Amino acid sequence: MAATRSAQVGVGVRGAARARGGVRRLPRSTPEEQGVDPCALSATLDALLRQPELHSLMVLRRGHVVAEGWAAPFGPERRHQLFSLSKSVTSTAVGLAAAEGLLTVDDRVVDLLGVPEREGGHLGELRVRHLLTMTTGHDTDPSQAVFSAADWVQAFLDQPLSHRPGTHFVYNTAATYVLSAIVQRLTGQRVLGWLRPRLLAPLGITGATWERSPQGIDTGGSGLSLRTEDVAAFGQLYLQDGVWQGHRLLPEGWVAEATRFQVPNGDPVTGGDWWQGYGYQFWRCRHGAYRGDGAFGQYCVVLPEQDAVVVMTSGLAEMQAPLDALWDHLLPGLHDEPLAPDPDGRAALQRRLGELRLDPPTGRDTTVTGAHLAGRTVAFGANALGVTHAVLDAGEEEDRIAVRAGRRTWTLRAGHREPVAQSVRLAPRAPSAALVSGTWTGPDVYLLTVRYPETPFVWTVQLEVSGESVTVSPSVNVAFGATRLPVLTGTLAGGG
Image 1 (cartoon, rainbow, N blue to C red):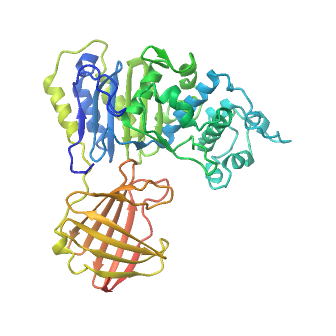
Image 2: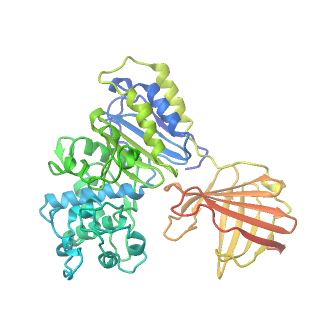
Image 3: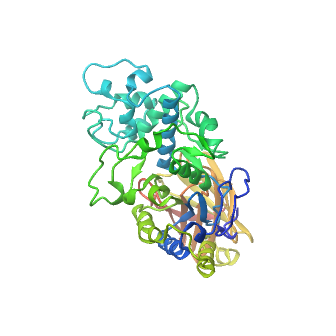
């Protein structure tokens, strides 16, 4: 989908939505019919848009979608990386395995994995519930050490447990991976396959993907990609105590157990929504809510007392502000009774949703501005990225940029008016489906934009020419580490 297309929006569609490839399956309603003030929804959206990169928003009240929007190039048919929101789905797989008698939350991890108990240490005390509640006994998060090893389960078991399991909370993505490994060992299926007939198919979720470890095990703590409405259906299932269209999908009592305050994880007074306690791979929130969430702004917030679900996908670094927007603006707009129709307020909301756009930067006519660089090779000195040469050829509709790194040469097609869809992998294990655009923002400054529209990530590469010298500054909007990569310096040579 080109970034210049209008945002996908929805407000005030009554009745059950038509299913289309598993995308639209929840009933739609006007906000007022479900007791939601459309002006409160607009205020919530305005607050969310003060943060960068809101990709999608869906608000449900009493099981009906009352507001939805996607910023082009995002849309209802696109999957989105969920990062740690995946953990809540893995927890659900554990609940379903327990319902079928394959395990209990009090089973020992060593027994379920079929490994011998070791003398000394606390490994023999480690139970499934400790993996679920992030109270494994590790003093610090072992995930980096685990995921850099060849065998992730073995590496997890090799990490020392400084505390007795159940006594010390530390966020631990590797623990969720071990839950995934346990489910796969007991069922003979990947978690994704185990969930398909039990959870995904009944909710109308199709096309889900999950990254895997070197051993072929779903990563569990991250790596799941779903559509916005898929996540909304998942949240609604939890709001309905595991019952969907009159059929119980989750075992009775699981939702209450998984989402309640299981363990403390910090000071609830000063810690905002991050220290309200932790359940089974669900965060407790203020106002009686709970949520699954993932890095860079992937949210599924369930408000049982208000009979509401809010789903967001994003590309942002600060994650408390969106939750504050819900409490400050949405919560006061939820009423017990239907509201009088407010066509003006609803129209304003529709207009705000229609403004959700993430177009790439535009600048000057590249065929004129970049003529002095066209076809000339830039030779780079030694750099951490291993890039040795690059050539930019300007065109009327798109530019072609050839980059050589070692023995490999790859070419980007950068659109001027609309991004060009192509396969580009700028980081290991990253998705490759990208939208690429390029423009001269000044006589000697070229800006390349690479957006991965099923992820939070946008890469920008600024190329600046000064005489015969060229400086290339790459960066990414959000990252677990630095967002700015090493700057490359080069010299203009002859034609490419």
